[in-house]
Image 1 (cartoon, rainbow, N blue to C red):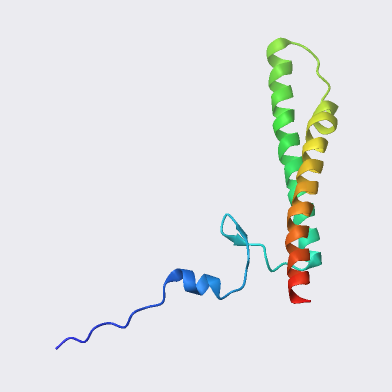
Image 2: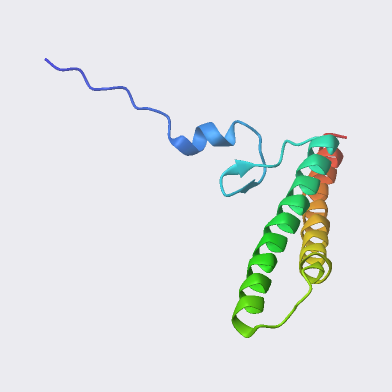
Length: 108
């Protein structure tokens, strides 16, 4: 006679035991320390700066070649990349810093 298989634990029980309070696209961010929070925030700001600067350079290149104008490429750094990079940096610091402060206050 066949014996019934034992019931396995649901997947949500294993993720709840880890203690991470919040995730972003499945990546747990609740357990970062102050240095990890700072490092991830600065990395997000740099990635946003370089990605938007690259896209702005491509757009300026296409605009210069199609319209036969001369838009300065410094516009891509100064007017596009820097503001977006700073906004992402401040937003990431605010969000991850809030998570870190809540976790520190909860342990105290």
